[in-house]
Image 1 (cartoon, rainbow, N blue to C red):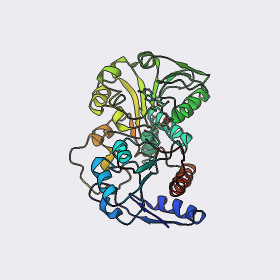
Image 2: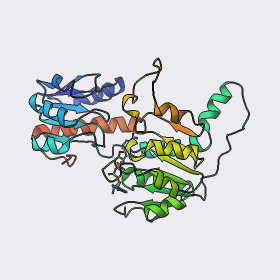
Image 3: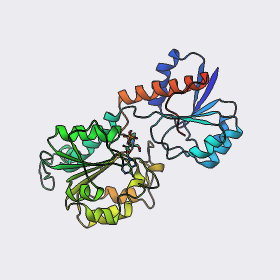
Length: 329
Ligand code: NAI
């Protein structure tokens, strides 16, 4: 019997995994609501593997504690792994597996949803109409049709977003270290050219040392005036202070964020009863042309199905000593 301890579990995670578990006999899952952090890592004693989500802290200290507890595998039920000390895990013989590309369309559709909502001020219209205010002041948007979209990172999600923009009748520019050969309608350009020509810039590259604060005062200055910026990738790609400065300087027509630097404490939690002390999020939310969602790009039925299926397949392969192709090394 392989015993897996799930951290940071919400009811929808549990439902999705419980539905699949009968097809994986020999596996037992216990669910915890707490995130995996150095403070909770010791709870994993007696388990073979832990399963963590995107906001868990699987840094050096956690990995060392998991090793002490006898954990042999870290199952990530997400694509990104920038929150895991992979090197330490490998050194200690802990296998790390993830779910790459569970539904690129889910995230790409959400990115376009944010772009549209922010552009056409749908977030404001929703509230206004509920108050019997049917006026249109302050809600003038612009057509995406025949405008230019700049896609930064054309992996699975970026490619899906490029396809959506193409379907909207936009010219699609892209910047990536590696070209995606399936995107014959996309023109690859330098980052500078992409920024200077795009009315919509959408970020889809991973957070690495190289991409940390990719969007900063300098790169914001290179963007077209009246640009729409969408980030569904990772908060650290955008230097929030510089973004706020740019919004104040009227550089952006609109901004749509599914991820932002300060999200860690907020993500998936109901904090509506709290008084948020010093919150950059609150500052961002005070602007009429900013729409923020809480890391929900992945959150579709199809994506949850794929996440539970691949995670359990990863666990089964680990148990049999087989490779899955989903290892992070
Ligand atoms: P992927 O690995 O298929 O594609 C990433 C692309 O970024 C690759 O083509 C790579 O060459 C490119 N890239 C890497 N470094 C770069 C750089 N310095 N400059 C430009 N391009 C660079 O990844 P996928 O599946 O498309 O996911 C992209 C990101 O989306 C993930 O890293 C994750 O952070 C984020 N994500 C967000 C979700 C959400 O719910 N909001 C859900 C899933 C992923």
